[in-house]
Length: 413
Ligand SMILES: *Cc1c(COP(=O)(O)O)cnc(C)c1O
Image (tube, rainbow, N blue to C red; front, side, top):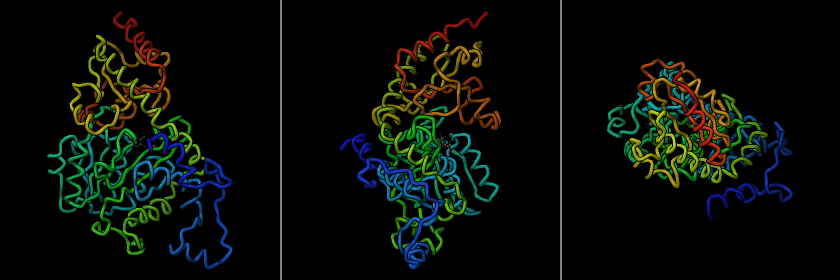
């Protein structure tokens, strides 16, 4: 069955909601009663799967996890309160001082900031250019535990060589961690590139409506946790495909406590039903807008993987299905103040966030990347004047008209 068919029937089919509902209901209970005291003992000892206390698991969150796992083709998923919680808690759960990670130099700013934090805890990090497999291989050390990358990076849209990195990680038996926030299924299935763990901010395309925060980690089942070495004996439960997620759940979710609320889980599950429809529409708009901007004399450079002169255009064409995503960035020509330009946009909202139904724009250097040094921004390919656009689902002509009037406003005195 097709993607959207599966999406709109997933809750009903995977979770069989009470009373024949087509949605799992939002259940608020923090605690769960055991009629037989042996039941709570078995649950605590992991002999019997059961909800015990909702910081670790609850019915509404479990239902969303089942749907996310189905979406990415995994062996299990775990939700968190935000995308950052999913990333930070999971990495804290798996790594220890002395471990080394190869990390993309093109990262969402807060993720980059988090990698700086774990360095303070003794984890070694080498940032590298993930568009080039040779550089990734050069960064390998005997204590390397994994590679961490985004699929299409925000804001400059560099495309990671997932195919080659996946092969490399498989050969070395190290974790391949992919943040698939920018290109969720059906656009890109990270498991097809041998990802071990997939991270995603549910806040963005998956929930899609700018009204709820959430994050998740999905285990694709491809990684050999036995060879990883860092799983505590207590978490080496019967089926070894579950070892990693068990440790992430205990040390990451239970102990650090950034739990997704049942209300948020229900809102995300609803938003997810139209994921493919919204994504396809947004990326059609993005392609048209990128082409329009690329041809406008007041625009110096457009960064969008759909344009043939994008450095990884052909890699993007191979990895992405039916489009090139809905994030683009561009530089205005010298002499146009990006702040004045943004103030001239009427329909487009000046806001941070991406993957919304509405088109959003912001200046990136003085906002998201304000904490980075000029040299770090240069490494990431971010110019001082760069504007990022998260393209929404509006009617294309309305969007282009708004950019056209703002580009043609009087800027040169
Ligand atoms: C937004 C984002 C995150 C963090 O997600 P939150 O839900 O905002 O915490 C992580 N990675 C990428 C690529 C993002 O765009």
